Image (cartoon, rainbow, N blue to C red; front, side):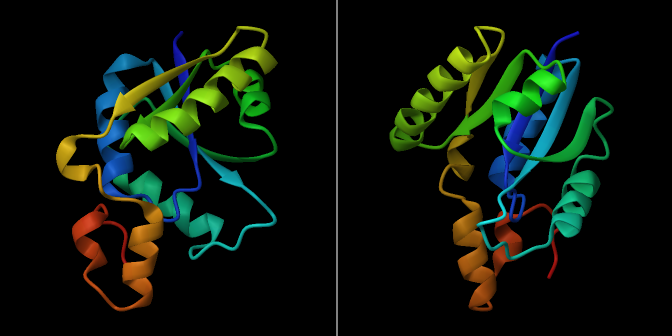
Length: 152
Protein backbone atom coordinates (compact mmCIF):
# COMPACT_ATOMS: atom_id res chain seq x y z
CA UNK A 1 0.00 0.00 0.00
CA UNK A 2 1.44 3.38 -1.03
CA UNK A 3 0.92 5.82 1.85
CA UNK A 4 1.89 9.49 1.68
CA UNK A 5 1.82 12.14 4.38
CA UNK A 6 1.18 15.76 3.43
CA UNK A 7 2.39 17.67 6.51
CA UNK A 8 1.75 21.32 7.25
CA UNK A 9 0.10 23.77 9.59
CA UNK A 10 -2.79 24.43 7.17
CA UNK A 11 -3.64 27.66 9.00
CA UNK A 12 -5.88 27.75 7.00
CA UNK A 13 -5.98 25.29 4.09
CA UNK A 14 -5.70 27.26 0.84
CA UNK A 15 -6.56 26.61 -2.80
CA UNK A 16 -2.84 25.94 -3.26
CA UNK A 17 -2.96 23.13 -0.69
CA UNK A 18 -6.18 21.82 -2.23
CA UNK A 19 -4.57 21.80 -5.68
CA UNK A 20 -1.75 19.59 -4.39
CA UNK A 21 -4.18 17.28 -2.55
CA UNK A 22 -6.48 16.90 -5.56
CA UNK A 23 -3.58 16.00 -7.85
CA UNK A 24 -1.96 13.64 -5.31
CA UNK A 25 -5.09 11.61 -4.53
CA UNK A 26 -4.76 9.32 -7.59
CA UNK A 27 -1.04 8.76 -6.94
CA UNK A 28 -1.36 7.07 -3.53
CA UNK A 29 -3.53 4.41 -1.89
CA UNK A 30 -3.80 6.63 1.18
CA UNK A 31 -3.01 10.31 1.62
CA UNK A 32 -2.75 11.52 5.20
CA UNK A 33 -3.04 15.26 5.61
CA UNK A 34 -1.15 15.73 8.86
CA UNK A 35 -1.40 18.98 10.77
CA UNK A 36 1.83 19.59 12.63
CA UNK A 37 1.41 21.19 16.04
CA UNK A 38 4.17 23.43 17.33
CA UNK A 39 3.58 24.58 20.91
CA UNK A 40 5.81 27.62 20.27
CA UNK A 41 3.71 28.85 17.35
CA UNK A 42 0.56 30.97 17.57
CA UNK A 43 -2.12 29.89 15.11
CA UNK A 44 -5.03 31.94 13.76
CA UNK A 45 -7.34 28.90 13.74
CA UNK A 46 -7.45 26.29 16.52
CA UNK A 47 -6.49 22.72 15.60
CA UNK A 48 -10.11 21.52 15.71
CA UNK A 49 -11.17 24.17 13.18
CA UNK A 50 -8.29 23.37 10.83
CA UNK A 51 -9.20 19.67 10.98
CA UNK A 52 -12.84 20.54 10.22
CA UNK A 53 -11.87 22.76 7.25
CA UNK A 54 -9.68 20.03 5.74
CA UNK A 55 -12.19 17.22 6.33
CA UNK A 56 -14.97 19.20 4.68
CA UNK A 57 -12.77 20.32 1.78
CA UNK A 58 -11.61 16.75 1.06
CA UNK A 59 -14.73 14.72 1.87
CA UNK A 60 -15.11 13.69 -1.80
CA UNK A 61 -11.79 11.79 -1.71
CA UNK A 62 -12.17 8.28 -0.31
CA UNK A 63 -8.45 7.77 0.34
CA UNK A 64 -7.76 10.98 2.31
CA UNK A 65 -7.37 10.91 6.08
CA UNK A 66 -6.89 13.99 8.28
CA UNK A 67 -4.74 13.75 11.40
CA UNK A 68 -2.40 15.83 13.56
CA UNK A 69 0.96 15.26 15.20
CA UNK A 70 3.61 16.81 17.40
CA UNK A 71 7.31 16.23 17.00
CA UNK A 72 9.28 15.31 13.92
CA UNK A 73 7.46 14.68 10.66
CA UNK A 74 9.77 11.75 9.93
CA UNK A 75 8.77 10.02 13.20
CA UNK A 76 5.09 10.51 12.42
CA UNK A 77 5.57 9.08 8.90
CA UNK A 78 7.36 6.00 10.21
CA UNK A 79 4.64 5.49 12.84
CA UNK A 80 1.99 5.61 10.07
CA UNK A 81 4.10 3.30 7.85
CA UNK A 82 4.16 5.95 5.13
CA UNK A 83 6.76 5.62 2.41
CA UNK A 84 6.30 9.13 1.04
CA UNK A 85 6.15 12.73 2.21
CA UNK A 86 4.21 14.98 -0.13
CA UNK A 87 5.25 18.60 -0.51
CA UNK A 88 4.00 21.34 -2.78
CA UNK A 89 6.41 23.75 -4.42
CA UNK A 90 5.41 27.26 -5.42
CA UNK A 91 8.77 28.69 -6.48
CA UNK A 92 12.54 28.03 -6.59
CA UNK A 93 12.98 29.26 -3.00
CA UNK A 94 10.52 26.59 -1.82
CA UNK A 95 12.56 23.96 -3.65
CA UNK A 96 15.85 24.96 -2.02
CA UNK A 97 14.28 24.95 1.44
CA UNK A 98 12.38 21.68 0.91
CA UNK A 99 15.37 19.90 -0.66
CA UNK A 100 17.41 20.17 2.55
CA UNK A 101 14.48 18.90 4.61
CA UNK A 102 13.88 16.01 2.19
CA UNK A 103 17.52 14.88 2.42
CA UNK A 104 17.41 15.14 6.21
CA UNK A 105 14.17 13.16 6.47
CA UNK A 106 15.48 10.43 4.17
CA UNK A 107 18.64 10.14 6.29
CA UNK A 108 16.69 10.05 9.58
CA UNK A 109 14.33 7.42 8.15
CA UNK A 110 17.26 5.26 7.04
CA UNK A 111 16.20 5.63 3.39
CA UNK A 112 12.68 4.28 4.07
CA UNK A 113 11.05 7.60 3.19
CA UNK A 114 11.02 9.54 -0.08
CA UNK A 115 9.76 13.07 -0.59
CA UNK A 116 7.52 13.64 -3.59
CA UNK A 117 7.27 17.21 -4.86
CA UNK A 118 4.34 18.52 -6.86
CA UNK A 119 4.44 21.96 -8.43
CA UNK A 120 1.47 24.10 -7.50
CA UNK A 121 -0.61 24.95 -10.56
CA UNK A 122 0.49 28.29 -12.00
CA UNK A 123 -2.71 30.12 -11.12
CA UNK A 124 -2.30 29.18 -7.47
CA UNK A 125 1.43 29.48 -6.93
CA UNK A 126 1.17 32.90 -5.28
CA UNK A 127 -1.17 31.70 -2.50
CA UNK A 128 0.17 31.02 0.99
CA UNK A 129 -1.51 30.62 4.37
CA UNK A 130 0.40 33.61 5.71
CA UNK A 131 -0.97 35.82 2.91
CA UNK A 132 -4.49 34.51 3.59
CA UNK A 133 -4.14 35.23 7.32
CA UNK A 134 -3.00 38.78 6.56
CA UNK A 135 -6.00 39.33 4.27
CA UNK A 136 -8.38 37.94 6.93
CA UNK A 137 -6.84 40.19 9.59
CA UNK A 138 -7.48 43.25 7.44
CA UNK A 139 -10.98 42.30 6.31
CA UNK A 140 -10.06 41.51 2.70
CA UNK A 141 -11.59 39.01 0.28
CA UNK A 142 -9.79 35.92 1.55
CA UNK A 143 -12.59 33.74 0.10
CA UNK A 144 -10.92 33.99 -3.31
CA UNK A 145 -7.91 32.03 -2.02
CA UNK A 146 -9.40 29.22 0.09
CA UNK A 147 -11.84 26.32 -0.42
CA UNK A 148 -15.50 27.27 0.11
CA UNK A 149 -15.59 25.55 3.52
CA UNK A 150 -13.12 28.04 5.03
CA UNK A 151 -15.19 30.84 6.49
CA UNK A 152 -14.43 33.08 9.46
